[in-house]
Length: 71
Image 1 (cartoon, helix red, strand yellow):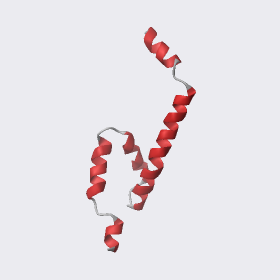
Image 2 (cartoon, rainbow, N blue to C red):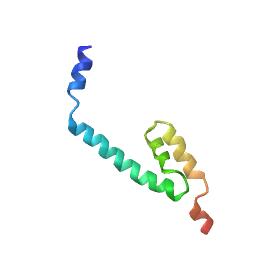
Image 3 (cartoon, rainbow, N blue to C red):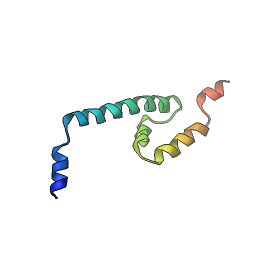
Image 4 (tube, helix red, strand yellow):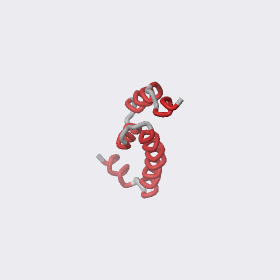
């Protein structure tokens, strides 16, 4: 019990700032890509779920993109 309490006390504000920055760095480009290919931007949340993000990445790699229709 004491170790968990000590770990929570050592969580600093800068760590929260780094987490928020990392989320922004990932979500913005992923949501823009998803929007361009016709998916909802909310699917960007999948980028943070282990294994699901890899499956979704493979799906995106092999679906037909709108730019393919123009060629």
